[in-house]
Amino acid sequence: MRHEVICSGFGGQGIILAAVILGRAAVVYDDRYAVQTQVYGPEARGGASMSSVIIDDEPVLYPHVREPTIYVIMSQQGFEKYGAGAPEGAVMFVDSGLVHSRPACRYHEIPATSEAKKVLGREIVANIVMLGALVAATGVVSREAIRKAVLDSVPKGTEDLNMKALELGFELSGDGGEGG
Image 1: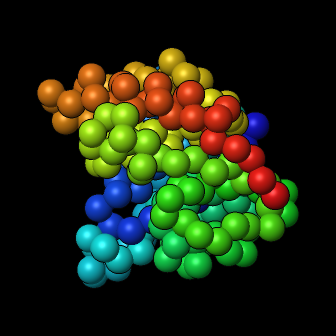
Image 2 (image 1 turned 60 degrees about the vertical axis):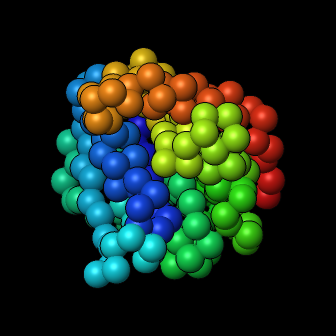
């Protein structure tokens, strides 16, 4: 099955890392095909950033998202630039504390940043919390694959914190509420 995923937020939230981890989980651990691309402005930290991942059972022949099926939106500016026009058939995961608008498509409100700070004491892992929620709700990759990909991708010494963030995301996917 093909999934075209767009992740957006502001620079410094780990949007690009989240997409890289998702692609790695698909290719290395779920034996699928994936292509990841990214866009961010010269301001890098603070400015809008976007990264996309295409995951498929067949080789991906064109690296750019044409029909997004999943959105991960972690800032209001990211919503306005990349999420506001989401097609009706898509599903969106919004960081409910940072994104104030809601799409016309189905969506999940995930308090990734606020819960990362409250439960784990570190906002920096909000991207991993959001990955956990995405995987738990959609099955875009397996839980085991995302666990292994996170461990492969995070800085040494932060593995325990990131695993806790991922598990928190798994839990929040059911409690985050669904709208739309």
